[in-house]
Amino acid sequence: MGMAASQARLLSITARLTNNENTGQAVSYSKQRLADQTQQITNEYNEALDATKLTVLTGFNGAVANYEDISYNLMTGMRMAENNKQYVVTDTKGRILVTEQLADAYTKSRGNYNQFLANLGYSQADITVQVTSNDENKKAATEQQIHEAWDKYFASVGINKFMPEHDFGFSFSETAAYGTTREDVDNSDNYNIGDGYVGYKRTAGYEQAIDENGQLMYSEYEIEAEETTVNVQVLDGYEQAKDAEGHLKYENLKRAFGSSTSKEIAYVAAVDAGHAVLLTTYPNIDKKPCYVLEGYDSYGMPKYNVYVDKNDTNDYSNGDSSHYNVIKLSETTDAAEYNKYLKYVPQFTSTSVADISKPILDYSKPIYKAGEEKTVKNVKKYNTESEPIYDYSKPIYVKDGSGNQIYDPINYEGTTQESRDLFDYAMAITEAYLRVNNEDGTSENGVPFKQQYDLDAFKSPANLDNNNTIKYYRNLYDQMQTCGYFTYTDTPVKSVNDKEHYKYSEEGKGTNKVAKNPLKDNYTFEAALRDGSLRLKYYSSTDKAFKSTTISEDNCIQEVPDERAIAKAESKYTQDMADLESKDKRFDLELKKLDTEHNALETEYESVKSALTKNIERSFKAFQG
Image (cartoon, rainbow, N blue to C red; front, top):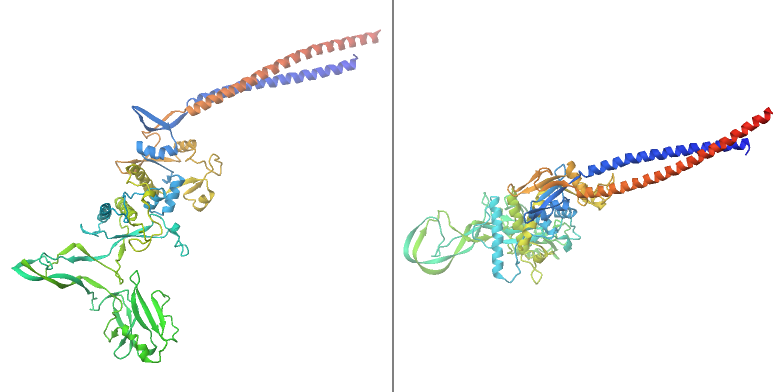
């Protein structure tokens, strides 16, 4: 090999030696980093061995306490409520975190507890028969139960609606769901169980009591005779009420026209006192409208036929054709033709009042007529100036012009939770009993129900197994109503339409834009309890209210070693150490290979160097010789 080739060869070997040494140094550094990683993995593993989790006491197996890992469903569910305590979860504002199902049920109920229960398939109506039942004994017992329920409510708000003895006297009227339009009012889907109102028979006092001798009873009396013949008194009506000026009073008074003896049409109108007064007269009898009362509608409003001249274009119906039926006369030039209708019109003088509207009766002034005669003993002579004695088993009911009973709605007038509970319960059992149609499609109040109450469709306290669940929902409802509520949903439109109550959450993602759902993700729920973003309250049966508690103070929650984290850490430690060991072996093999290569290069280097040295020496000798 020539000198030039030897020199090139020597340079190449030197470069390879340098690269070999650099590579060996890099591998050595990698082995050193493996040692650091091993220490880090060991430290993480040791920390994981100290990890804890929250568990909840769910009951006992004999003397052994049973604990389960904490989660939203476990903590707030029925099992905890029945076996331990009822818990609710709140945010930092005090709002209750509920499931989406509960949020939907509350939203649809619009503050109506009975409808809230119905939306969940429950009812607090603990009755087993309805008004259409053939079991008269059970019906009577149920009606008594309804009476007692309303009596308790009335007593709680200081209202004395009924005396101890009274008949059934209630009605139920359904109302369309909120937002129902005129176009879809006949759609039964717009009528919900829980929507409606209860009415009680309008009364105006009680009949005056009659003693065993057929005489009206007063508080003061004396014995007038040991035996005599008397007429048994029979109620025959009531005097018409008068105002302070002595005018007879009417209700639902509308315009009325009448003929006076001077052939004038008198125009009368209602005033605040409820009576009619003569306002003015018109001389042209042939040209003026004639109002004739034809009866009353189902609400007690009067209905009129209005007779007018055939050329009269005025709207005498006032836009209310259901109460004013305008009839144009074929002949108005002949007064005799028009006079045919005047027989229906009351006669007026300058001081007369209208008598075509429904009179207002004075129920404190009954009119009695004599009935059959009978011989009686110990006849009492009552002081009619003393206080009358009334028969509270005989209420005086107020009816409309068509003879239909008038019912006044019962509105909630309380201010306490007790009165609210009593009202809701009375409403529930009344609706369950009355909201059903007869076989012919009619109902007890005369208006067919579009949505009937099906006793079998709801879980109620009639089955004692449902009591705890209904109490559980009552507590939740009260908290949602008092404190507010929110939930998580995977339906974006809900969170857009109601941002206050619905938070959008895609399960398992938890990006910076979408929160993880603590209702479904147990780790997220536990972490929120630990950092205070979610908090706990429990129902105290002693205080009848929810009380705040913490994970460190609550006697049902304990912190224990987290087998989940430990097992996960052990798996990760084993895998990481195996990976490091594999890398370490690979680095050892690579270092051994580099060492062998380095030795070979050094041997070659020495050989080439020796050959080059000899060549140089021979060359110098040649030049010297």
